[in-house]
Amino acid sequence: MSSPTVTDIFKRAMELRSTSPSGPVDSIKPQLLSEFSGRPFPETAYLTIPEYDNVVPEEDWTAGLPVTLRGIQNEDWNDVIHGIIISLEQVENYPKESGREDDPTKEWRNRGKSIAEAEEKNLSKWMPEELMAMAKRNVTS
Image (tube, rainbow, N blue to C red):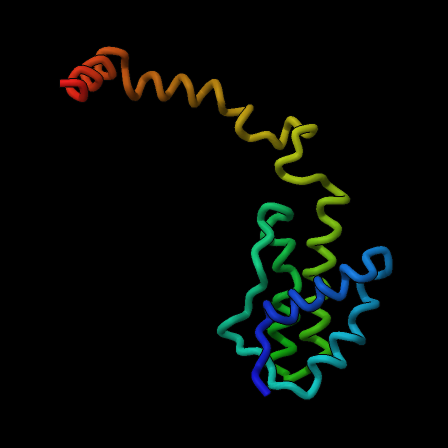
């Protein structure tokens, strides 16, 4: 029996969660425990889950990894799965509770809008019209 990775377990948790998205997140814990208990523990060198930076900040989607690491080190599947559940819960709850980073209705989160004027000002200083005209002449000749 091959050793699952933390990513494998997280992806399986997401699959199980998609079958009952309205129930409590903990409801998938018994299923995960029955599937992974008795198998070799994941290697700590591959202690990662898929990145969800486009959905939640890194500190949220990685929230359960310390608990998962403790479970691997202590060879305790309950802790391994508990850590996975924590991360899954964060990935699910963050967008509901605070809105997505790229939500257009949240102007204060729209980083591009807030720096557009300064960016335009700096780019025009960086490449003045005379230099731009010279560069264009050299490209055409």
